[in-house]
Image (cartoon, rainbow, N blue to C red):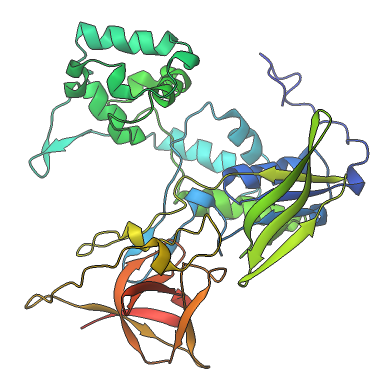
Length: 405
């Protein structure tokens, strides 16, 4: 797409790029960015689908928009997008992605019709005292000093905001305004968050400021975003021959400088616990995403806090959990309290317990079917964190189930 005030350029189909039949693409990550890159290579770049390789560390596509059902907790996902009518690239993509539910229509058609028939808004934007209406009443409640500071932040050059917190550019009175309540509960900002990031959000969503008090600025999908957006896009790509290779933990891309160009020479990845490489040639294209914003997320439940320390830190080599995680305090049993455990199940031999929530992590030990271990936490991809002596290890949800005692 070109930046244009009309449809003359945006609706025209691009010519087939010269030499594209000889090119291959390697896309690291299957979040919306990675999947969209593959889509444009297919539709506009007219690259053969079988020459497009999506490399995904996990066992499920979607990045932060992944989603699944856990029989012990229900449906959940790590994140989602707050969408509006000016997501130009997204809507350009989904106007050509077929619905997997309704024949003959696109994902954009479904989305548009839904939000026309059932527009989003909230009758009660905030509550106090365990459910009472906070009566924000669609007001921003901005005093003059706060309003002026927001306006100044909007026009301040980015270079002047580097390494500054929001608290350094906004007055103390701002934290008591309804505007800050709307803002932090919508975008997950804190006082210590980046002032530069807040400026970018203000500039990006200034046309929707009037919709903050009641969420009318937002549009939503019919189902969760994994099923409404990710699955149709994956099905589209697969129908064109695109391959998604799961369990590919990309650790490095070897890049060399040649004159004024930087050239990718090799992709280094770990699969099934073994480090392997992909050698690249001149006709190969490499698209890198740095990992989703919820890459190290971990879940708790109504009686267990999310144990973030249980998520393996493997940024430097394949280190064992004992090298990166402090020993956990042993919880004392409470009379009448339900104990949650993980039952190991397998029709074959022993089941591996690993240092992280995936098969690319190193093995700690293996345990026999029928063994029960103390439950610690659940990861986004169905793996369970369990106590193994003084360590925390991970077992695949395929070979385990959560039980209570």
